[in-house]
Length: 128
Image (tube, rainbow, N blue to C red; front, side, top):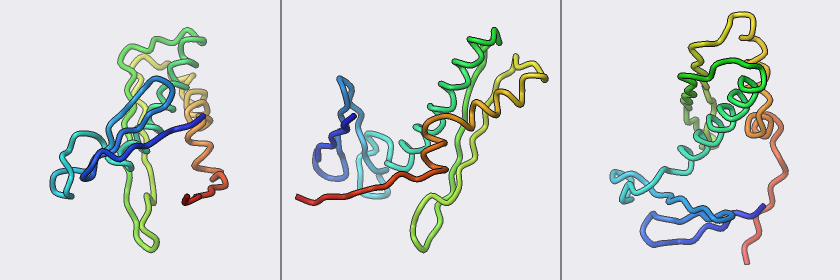
């Protein structure tokens, strides 16, 4: 897969992958136009969205009602080095039977983004 980021000026960028685009920007108080999410917000969206996908797929296969499924994600920024130091992800699934809670937790913890964060990939930055 390839993600391409194009600089649009100011603090704004366009991310393109396959046939989709999203706008990346900064809030007004950080010099941007607030026309899109910031990179940390997109990272949290990736984690929460991946968990939501895995949970919904499991529930559908297991015959569990997904009405009201929602996933929230909070994060804390830490210093030295500046980074996201923790995520807290909450899965809300009103119709989840108590005897399936552990299975859903297991599925949520196995999503691709969660696994990637728990086992960081090698990263190479090449400046041309």
